[in-house]
Image 1 (tube, helix red, strand yellow):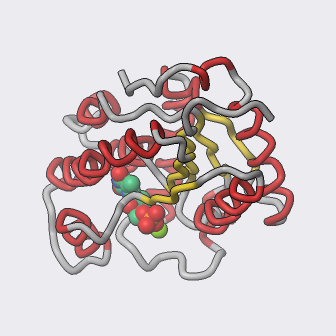
Image 2 (spheres, helix red, strand yellow; image 1 turned 90 degrees about the horizontal axis):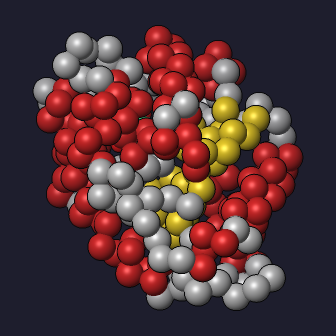
Length: 216
Ligand code: TMP
Ligand code: MG
């Protein structure tokens, strides 16, 4: 494996209960066992003041206007953007559980005329652009049968179905260039293997010799 001049920015995405947290942890371990220095992040980051407002909203403890909560989710990424860039420059591989893809599709899934995919994407312009996003694809009906489904705001069948449709719509845009779809309806080990193969493949690409770019 050739040494990288910088770390990689890797994102794991998917519907609620697609297995993101499990696969995120396994991917971090697998990359570490390849000898890489890894930083693990997740969005929303519920520990910051903005993240605490998001957490209260998701748990149904507070109300937020739809555009406002959208901008708070985006602001929650912006507050970490500098830290992500520096870590990558220092050679850390940064692995994130959810990023702007979720930010765009979950808000747009509310199907408000004035909250389109484009409107939802604009505040994300300028954030560090991932080298690869692995989308863990699962049928909403299968996800709904997994433990704890239904606890938070967006965990309804109608919302998850719309979110999946919009993820596929997003894949047809420039964001789709970085997305690799993995069938998450299989065993944890099979999904894990698929993810590491796809990530390794991207880390061998010539773009890894160039600086991290931005979402445009
Ligand atoms: P989590 O289940 O990964 O903790 O994410 C919480 C919920 O927040 C999940 O339903 C997806 C949603 N979400 C957004 O609506 N916008 C965002 O920008 C992010 C990161 C998550
Ligand atoms: Mg969730």
